[in-house]
Image 1: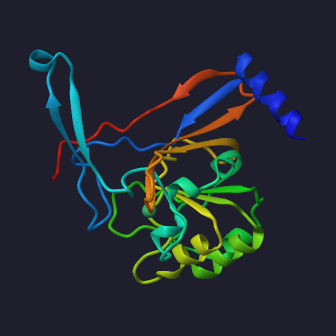
Image 2: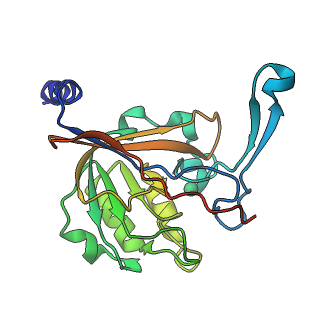
Length: 233
Ligand SMILES: [Zn+2]
């Protein structure tokens, strides 16, 4: 089975029937951050004109843009970023569309095809103060199903009024990807590549995330960034 998957991978890269979606939010000063998190800033430290090279310093939070949550985000003494198994971050995944649902309940998930990695597209576009949430029962159902990773297009699986889902998922060792950019990606089966920065001892890390679909007669990378709006902060 593993060997067959590997052969399919190689065939996908050599052939022309491959489609890769970029599921990452761009990071830039003025972008939306979770209330209370540090704003993003880039500052030029060296200039080509005076130093012979351009170098910037970056300020941002560990949960900026598209990122993973490590268990240590909610669990005292929990596993930090470097302890997350790379095997969880890459492999077969299923993207489900549950758009327009404010509270994702167990009943919404019960009929869905499961996969080791589940990605839920809620349709949230970082443009409203309140984002959809996963109820504690729904989070418990995903734990019961034995998934290893949950990807979301929201900044969190829960909200201050329903705070438990983060802990339920992280305690079960489920890696959470938050703020995925999914508006251009249809439901379906994908190979996920989630590559977080190796920030030692940290509770989360910004990540580049791709979803690769094989066997489609197209050979291009979908980027389609929404143009960053003028700095707001
Ligand atoms: Zn987070």
